[in-house]
Image (cartoon, rainbow, N blue to C red; front, side):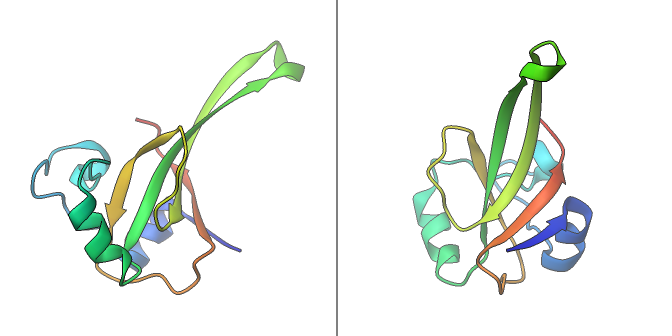
Amino acid sequence: MTSITYTQFKEQFKPVKNPINPVGPYEGTLFDKGNPALIAANLQIKRVWSVIQKTEILADVDSTEVVTCYLTTGVVVNPGLLGYMVTELPYIDPNTTVTGVPVI
């Protein structure tokens, strides 16, 4: 598994703007979950990334709730799925994870 930072992801893979919502989250690069045709077309060429929000309860720290976001390659079924990013360049390692993604 490869892990890169969000800054590295943006520099290396170049997320494309969502033409429907160019001022939306993540500098206008978040695509809605409800656009299967766009996702299917780009999934074939390894340019789709799932944006996941994860909430953890830290029992050892007074039950503090911590929310983080990350990206993973392809389309995943996850209750924390926020949407997708499509990139100009394809990923090579299908097990790439992007950490340090801002929480929206």
